[in-house]
Image (cartoon, rainbow, N blue to C red; front, side, top):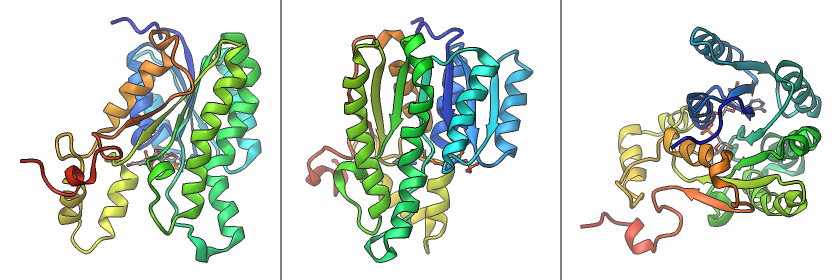
Length: 264
Ligand code: NAP
């Protein structure tokens, strides 16, 4: 299927690792051009050179999205490089465990890491998206609807990501801009691997979590997440907007009697 993404310009946050990297690689495979914003440099530059050698554009932009100025600069650098923006993918974020005990300043910090830059990037990219009748995709989390405990900041941010997806979908429908959210539950990424590695028996912990996922008793891969994002970014999903789509092997919505024990 031709997804019609050849030559489209996508600005992706956190595209050097994990789910973001999966999204970047899948979009590049479909012929899109990428601007990829991250804090650390090594992986972003490596991705850029890997694709340069294949004649593809994976432009690395260094920046900490917690600074609003970095969001404005990322948009400006993307336009300088490619002359347009067709797709914005808000992906960078971290489940930082800022709970009720952490206090208001820490809570605001968590919102800066997980929410404010989603708004800022779209705000600064809006003129370009209007010109291109573009697409916005927000990466959310199951935590927006399930609760997790001990992570007020992240839960609030991801709840707001769902709300903003619907809010912007309505705001921007008149400009032909579509806005959707893709929600992972348990996707295997460096971030996840890092969390599991802090547990007393990482292999057992990984097996236990995988066992809670009805479809295949395994983690979602970043490529599976990316496939949904790529479809939503493409004109093949031209009448889909305001949707909150879970790519989670049934983890979030199945009856607990099926997620708590293996299926026979
Ligand atoms: P990851 O493996 O840690 O990758 C996150 C990427 O985002 C990294 O490249 C990181 O770059 C970048 N990043 C984070 N904060 C940034 C900032 N302030 N400024 C610039 N770059 C930043 O994470 P992931 O697991 O792929 O998660 C991606 C998204 O999926 C997040 O929104 C997360 O909440 C969501 N999610 C993931 C899961 C899961 O199971 N993995 C579940 C639910 C939701 P640097 O290291 O250079 O900063």
